[in-house]
Image 1: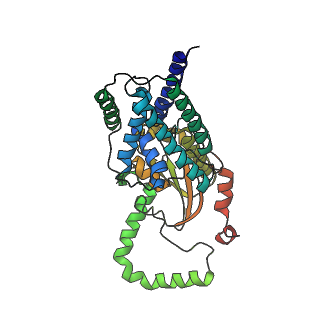
Image 2: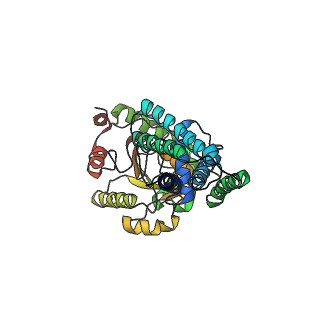
Image 3: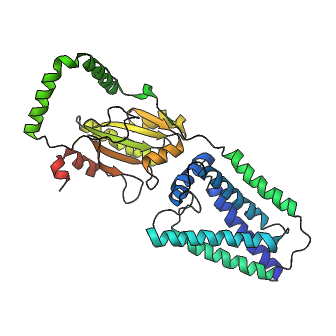
Length: 355
């Protein structure tokens, strides 16, 4: 096999690698995938919420551009190959630092959520790709006549295409009170009624508080969980707060398990859901699978990850008691939802939980 054929094989392999990397960062839908990439990969690096949306789209656009430019003859040795090696080198340095600081865990984000890859796996992949590029550089003849404006226009076109495919949205949280349960609405009415007659029962409340202090109720001290803007009564007594994506199979199965637990135990805590603003048309079907409709709120993708935590994943299930986080399950791996364990945890007194 002559050098020309070998060089074309190398160019096709590298092109496929970069195009796959770019496409994977748009899976399963462009805005969802890019927003997830920003929160999980760029925010931890120090990118602000204002800069990350621009950087993510420019980066993916450059990956697309390099994936196609490697197949073109224009400035292949002078610009395209050196730029590709530089980009891979920067990624490798970052991944090496991340591995040194945090260990070889989690998804590096090289192929988005389509192909999860640990930092060490990504480093090996990048080193191999750099080696192929160096070999390609040696095999190729000197650049002939090239059109710089064509290369430049092509690169800018790929970047602009990303802004069109995944237009930026403001990161806002929408609260829809229509989704509150009847129990929550009743609680709000009762609270309003109490406020009008509070002066007449003030002494009674003081007496009850003194009795509670004497009895020393075995429960955590009330605190603010930070979720009251979603569900006003979330910090009162025991609650289950879930973080789900409507189209997520694992989320649907978790909701189904919670329904079964609630049917078997009438004292099971009230369940509320924060849904990601992705495939919201599937929410009715989600509750059909769950077997029960729960109070819910919908937030945009970036806000969802910020509320859930950029190191966590769906499905998320948090057991809250008087505003205190008691247990937090997330993802589908070692910290995944455990119905049997949660059942035992809910039955325990607070003093037992601290042991």
